Amino acid sequence: MAALIAVIVVIAVVALALRLTVRVVQQGFKGVVKRLGRYHATHNPGLVFLLPFLDTMTRVDMREVPRRGDKQDVITKDNVAVGVSATIFHQVVDVNKALFEVQDYLTAIGYGSTLSRAQKDAARNIASQLDSNIHSQYRQTSNRSGMSVS
Image 1 (cartoon, rainbow, N blue to C red):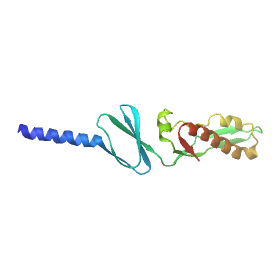
Image 2: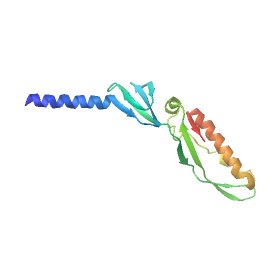
Image 3: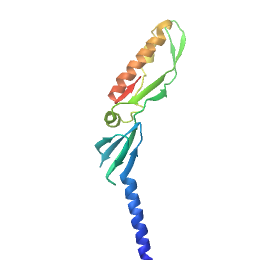
Image 4: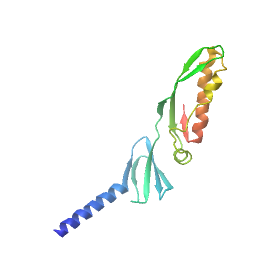
């Protein structure tokens, strides 16, 4: 009876070690391995072998992701109310910058002050100016966080 319990415990420990050792990185993702909290390696899709209890792996989505921007109401200089909303497409291009230079890379991109400048613009060209302003500000902030915005 004691031998059966010992075999079950050994099987459970081996299964746990295999579960902690072998990971799969899916297509469209990259796996970033940290050993004892420090960056160790970046893995492409496929099988990844980790050291149990020492390594942790974070999966980062490398695909282009659409995100709906907040709707902003803007009043132009000739008192025309304009509602501006945008769909932002972003993609992580540098995994290390996205994980280690920004606290939360998914919320690191913003366009707060761009819309206040738009109040000075004329109503006929406000849409194109806002588009270029928002896009350039997203591009600036995304480069710092290792992402690409289109």
